[in-house]
Amino acid sequence: MNVLRLVPSVRPGEVFPTGGIRTHREYLDFEIDGARLGESLRSLGDDVIAVAPADLGADALPDGRVPLFVCPECGDLGCGGVTVVLERTADEVVWRDFGWQTDYDPEVFRERYAGLGPFRFSRAQYDAMLS
Image (tube, rainbow, N blue to C red; front, side):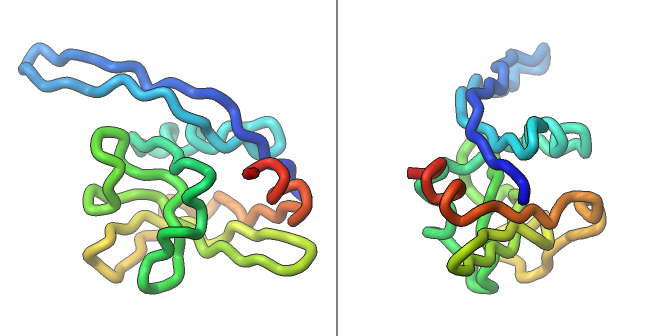
């Protein structure tokens, strides 16, 4: 079983010479077996922040997938985000089939995320950590 923790993380703000800005965000990142999932996604080129733990599974997309990471500027899946298939049994929770998708297009882009997951968590540890 994998071990999931929530760890404080920061996306630093920035003002660009062209006049654009990148908003400073403080959030809780998912740490799996000591490695931050958000850092893994940034290494793939994604600029995203983790969804608040209380929201996990609450806003499932029409295809049943759930967002784990969303746009750090607006929090909207219209900009795209990292989603997973989240499966729950009496004993475990599984995050599998990572992909990039939006809330307006049914296509899920999985190729970049082929090396992520599946992650299996003890249901008791998972529920305790998110509560």
